[in-house]
Length: 179
Length: 174
Image (cartoon, rainbow over all chains, first blue to last red; front, side, top):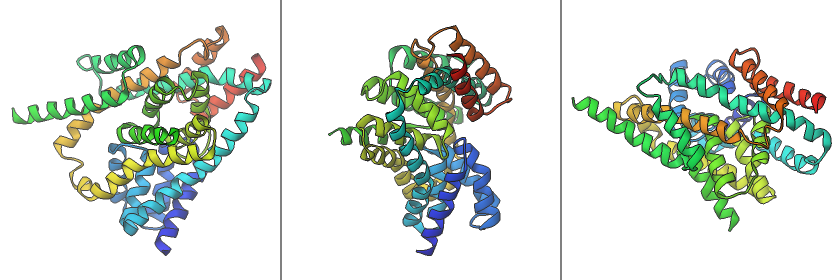
């Protein structure tokens, strides 16, 4: 009970005080979970983050699930993820309600006219940045190009893309191993 | 009925979204804007902006906002957010221990190596879909795009600062 409450509290605090999404949360998580509360060693924390990134879903929520489970099994997971989600949920809901009332306001309109092209730029930058870290070279560049065209022009569901890419990766790795 | 649809849609996104918040934009676009038409492209762009500048994980913010806009009430948010988190909750509770031990196995690494370049394509598609007449209304929009791109690319400014600056720019220039 005590454990569940502290899990909820720690992740709610982290969720409330970090701007900029999951990756911005990692330093604060490390500080809270490793240095302050000593729930995990630094090596455990790094393993947990690696697994949270590799698993599907929201990375920050996955860290909460994994840390919660280590501390207090299933209920620990549920408490930790509830904590991680709750501040975002409440804040966004208030904004959504507020925005619905003010979306036709002329100032809000002008503000979003400036913001919309900037949003496109925000999404475009990680494309080039990730292309570097994913080691995309001349031999593999066709994969992101083909995916982008399929999804953009033919509206192919990303679900199929992920399935095919995952199976393709598995097959490629298995074939290389058998050689 | 719409609640069930909402649940299935976000459960699916939670299950297949590898690659973080930016990759999720592509899933959301495909499901919520294109297939279900719960949001217009303009509403969707605004949703991405608002989710970036508020605290917490961006994916959670997007689900909560999209759920509310799709249905028009709080239950839409609740269902979308829970459905998004549920697949990884189940997966990691059941298989967490096994995955800790096997995450560096060649099979799992192979699957992830296949997914990684595809995710780059998904994010590119998300950006391309948003290059439309609603978001780019005139030459000033292109200016906003270029300045934002350069600021973020050169790491002179983070996403939040760029959005705040472009909001101020929007008020001044329109």
